[in-house]
Length: 270
Ligand code: ADP
Ligand code: MG
Image 1: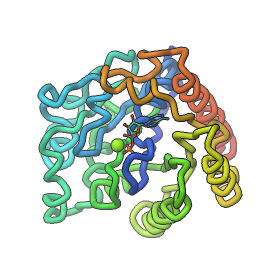
Image 2 (image 1 turned 180 degrees about the vertical axis):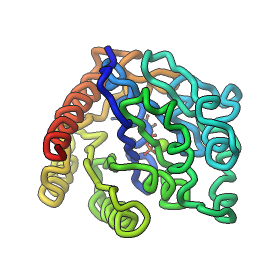
Image 3 (image 1 turned 180 degrees about the horizontal axis):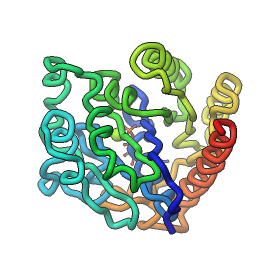
């Protein structure tokens, strides 16, 4: 049951300038797992629209979505859609989103459009506990809009060679945004994805990332699991597609650890 005691939703961007590291997969499946007892809005900010497709909204069904929210003046309430998961709402990526990077470059307040849209939608958002923003694989204006709108950044990291080099770019960007455009922003977590127990490299990379980032790294590791990669073609989170799969169980564990960290954060903030 959704908690009646929520105030403002916490806004979390899933970002990493590398593609194929598990941003969208983690956005969909963490959001779906949390929706068991929280209200969650997922914003698809990637023109590829994989989060929308993965939640069962086909390309031709998308209509107006994130682009309209960023550039247009449609209120958010008219753009979000329910999904097959109760308590999980989606702001889909419309096809026009592909042009948004270029269009944003020419308009006022270009890094704050998403933040302003969310601020203007206060009444709609007050019902939500979490807002997850699935970012595109770049550090352009769309991702910048997410980092300016968010309070927290979650970085999915694929357990592969050069993972640490890649992550330093997003951590530097987060620091820069926190110094200038959005003082409250923190990098709250790194999630190791596509972990392969049979591959020594996965273990080495995980050890390196933990040595460097310490407690920022979630204990829960997402294994490489075929069910995770099959689920999007059925338009559903892996939790619906195959609840018993190691992938679904890993995202449930991640959601539990996420909530535990949230409780700890709120205690420290109080
Ligand atoms: P990103 O959003 O960072 O580009 P995705 O979440 O789309 O990355 O993942 C890239 C590809 O890898 C997708 O085809 C996805 O289904 C697959 N994938 C992601 N996580 C896993 C996993 N844990 N096991 C197997 N395949 C995965
Ligand atoms: Mg993606």
